[in-house]
Each structure stands twice: as C-alpha cells, then as structure tokens.
Length: 419
Image (tube, rainbow, N blue to C red; front, side, top):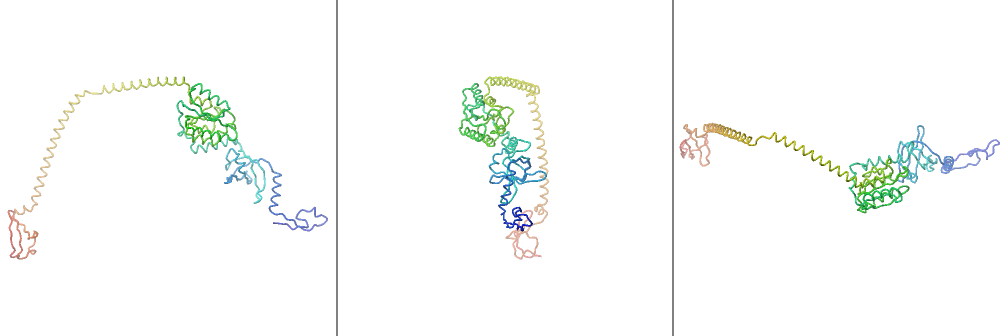
C-alpha cells in the first residue's frame, strides 16, 4: 500500500475543503483500488470509439486472444482483441496493416497497463471481405490448391450428376430444366444446403463429402445464383475450398453471375459462369455433338487425303532415284572379284615377309646355340651325378666322374689330375 501524510489544516480552510493529502487524518488507497478508479474513469469517458492506426508486434496467443500495438507516426498504444471478437473477423490482421478499430480504453489492473480493447476491426482503404478474399487466395495458391496440373477433365456425358445448392433457388430449377431437356435419362442427386448466412460454408463442405461417399456420382455441380459479395461469401470460405480440393469426383463451380469470382472457382476442376452454364457444360446438346462429329469427320477425311498425297509424292521421288538392281548387282560382283584378288595378293606378300623374318631369327638363334660352339671343337663338361656344368677346374676333385659332350657324342670320364 502507499499513503501520503496529510498536513494539518491551516488558516480558515476546513478539512472537508482540503484535498485528500491535506486532510488531518491519513487516508489509504491500495494500488488495486487506484487502478480500478482509473479504469472506471477511463471506461466512462472512452467507452465506445473508433481509432485509426497501424498494427505492429501482432501476436496470436494459444488462447485465441490477439495482442498487438496500434501506432501512428507520433505515438502508440497497446491493444488486445479477445478470441470471441477475433473469431468474427473475415480477414487476418497482419503487421503493417492500416486498420480502423472500434472499442474502449481501459486499464489492465494487474499491471496498470493502459490498453485499447478492440471489439471490431476493419482494414482501411479496403473492405474486410475483399481483404479476406485476397489473403485466402494467396494462402491456398501457395499450397497448390489452384495448380492447373491437378485439375481433371470432366467425364463425357456423365450418367449420374450431383448438385450441391439450395433447393429453394431458381438456380436448381434452371439446371434441372437443362438436364431434363437434353438427356432426360440422366440420374440427378440433389444435396440441398444453405448457400448464405451462418453455417452455410460448413453445410456446403459436408454436402460435397456426402456426395463423394455415395460412390456413384460421375460429376458434381457446386453453386448458387447471383448476389452480393456477402451473399456469395460461403463459397469464399476455406472449408469449402478444401472440400472441393479433396473431392474424388470432378467438381464444376457455378457461383453467381459471369462477373462473379469466388475461391471455389479457383479450386474447382472447371468454372462455369452461371449454374445454367454448368449444366450445359457437362451435358452438351445432341445437335451440337452431331455438328461437332460432322466437323471432325470432314477434318479427318481432309487429313487422310493430305497424308496420302504426301506419300504418293514421296514414292514417286524414290522411284525416280531407284537404279536397276541387276546393274548394281553386276557392279558389286566385279568389285568383289577385284577385292578377292587383292586380298590373296596381300596375304601371300605378308606370308613371304613372315617366312623371311622367321629364317633370319632362326639364323640368329643358331649362331647363339651351344651346339654351334661344339662344332668348332669345344665340349661341355657336366659333373655327375648332379649334372652341374663345370666352368672351373677348382670345382672338381680327383676321382670325380664327369660327362663330356662333344659335337658328336658323349664320353664318361674320371678326373685323375687337375691343373
């Protein structure tokens, strides 16, 4: 607690006329009481007002409450938006965003912090719905939900058609009329839903999942008739976009009029400008199909005639360039004879060179042969019994047996003396 010592009243001023700190008896306020008094005064004076500012230091707590700072070029103030109010926002607040905030000024008595408690928020210069649309579009596009390569072709003349729309609107009546007029034998499964207002987006997402679970739907139309941006907003909700993305059945988005675009249009496999156009897209008129078939038939005939003409020209050109095969055969036979003669000549020439080289090698080997040395009167002496060649008389002993090899014949000898 804190207190201020009051001085005694002076002169003729009564104690009742003096401020709190001048009273004779000391009075005390706890910090909590002081904060509560300030809080009450602030909330009484600033209980409902709009404030313009820029968001910074934005933080979403696990509790769902959002804490941030509102600032301009000269000052700033702490702000808080509780989960209940934040859940009603169509867009996601971000740092640097210029906003208009409706709320009240008060004190967070636990810390004595001055705060602006935000009950509603709108972006400056751009509507909340338009901003929410762009934010979600950017997010889903980054995740690949709009990628062209994941979009599927619609089945040709589907047998069973699913429709997710209101059962009270003119859009359903128009689609059924188109289907009945063109192909009355087609089966239609209608899953009625709310198409605007609270809970509409969730109903639409559940309806898409329900038709997928049936397992008999070939193609699905999801949409409604025209309306304002607010009326069409259910088709801009993330839950609907993800339901379309996860659908195993190809989806045609048909929301509003031709100028209306929704998030559902970007995710769907095909976008139709209106619900009526969606029915016409999946079930073309028989007369149109017959006309298209005739056009394709004529084009096929023209293409065949063109290719046949090209082939005739190619065959004619080849025929002109093609020579008499018998003359070519005779020329090749003559060439073969010439090559055979040349080959035999080359073979014999090479064989002769090999023989000459072999004779030269044999002569050189003969000159190096020890037998050639023996012819000149020399002999080779082997000591017995190990047949070691004797090069030095010192390696012999008296009485050793040796074998002497001559140019012609051999002799067994015994050493009687050595020098």
